[in-house]
Image (tube, rainbow, N blue to C red; front, side):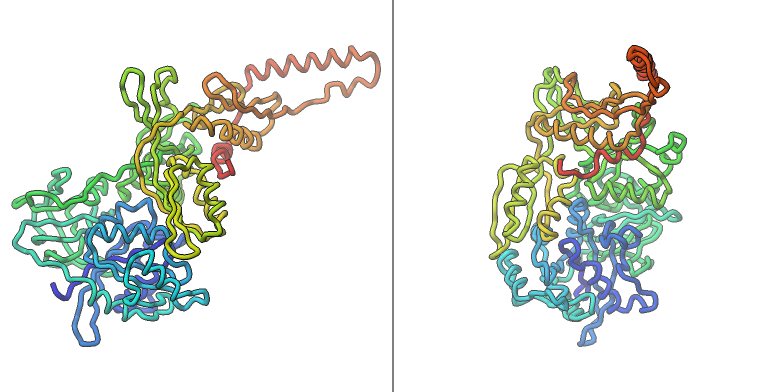
Length: 598
């Protein structure tokens, strides 16, 4: 055990986690230069294009130090985005230490702090590393000062490296060996293994990534998942190189995988404890919770004939993503579809993109919404994530919406613009920290619904790209919420309905009406587009009709001849409006929810 280390790399987005992992894999000799590619642990095209990690990966690195000692270093790579913070916490629970990566030009940012606190909660050894020291804009002394003051870590022990250029990689390896403690060996206690990830293999079923804390497991054992009491027979265990490598057994202190004929990823819960059915552990490892969706949206096929194909695609996608939930839904405007739950907006974008790329689905997504709670006059509490199920206004005693605590780190000169943005989005209870001269951390309590649209884009714009943002779910708070309906030609379009705060309803309605006016083509009759709360119209735009010049043939004579023809035309248009239906193009549904200053 003294020659094993389990560690993770944590950092803000784009501070070089994947690049450092690449260099460490190359240094360990796991891949030849001709087979190497950037972001080698990231398997998906989307991960490579966006430069982000979506699924956490693990790999065992063999390393020999200058004294000729052989070590086995288990690197558990983690996603950097806030949507996947629960997966990150389970990965951290599987380690004894972390490398905390800080960009030499950007310095300490919002998620650097959030990740440090997560590592400290798990009582892990923290090794600060300054990356990208080769950049012309690198300010190493300033970043060391931030590490000392913001993070409270000793800047004398900071490792300097450039993952891209391969500078200082041996120093990083030596710091992992010297400053991260080896795992404890406990082979006599009953088996306890923590699941930190699960992936689906179309030939073998689900393979579970786990860290064994006590006991051991080998092929042929009957294992039990402690959250749902499911029992499986182990077919294979092994460790992660760049490919899965079978082993005779996995014992305490090791990180590896278990294949046990598990049919889908949703049968496995991240954070669950594996134990032996014959000798179960008395209690599971701490920290397990079900991943709970916070953002909801409906997915519809562009053509109603593709509904069955979409149902198959979602079923296959669910095999790979346990956090994704969906159920059948229908809309008068868009037909049959599915109501889906996501961990956050990035998760929603990834699901949408993977459905279109990997499963060749053309889909329409309705406006993302959050789960609201309504306390009714009869004392009942109703949870609503779809505007379709908004209760009758007369029966609502109070309405509650989810709040988040946002942490925004910015250079001081942008403070006014960021304050204005947050207050515009109903931010309240503001607090300030001044970590280092010239930098400020702003903490706000904000409704989750207000960051769903374009908050992050606007923040990046007003801070010229220097603002960083992190959030955590707080609680539900009382607010005045109303249902905003959009009427086209007097008919409600349920796919465009939204639950909004009363003060923001008119702005949203004006924005929706203007966008629809741009997208809906002109018809032979006048089309009113209205935003309404109940029976009250709060916004309106009108699409003017095509008009035939019926008086063109009247080249003279009395005015009454022209008036007679115009009156006849008006009656015909009125009759056409009564029976005519408005065709709303698919692009209109998307356009309504595109980012805008409102």
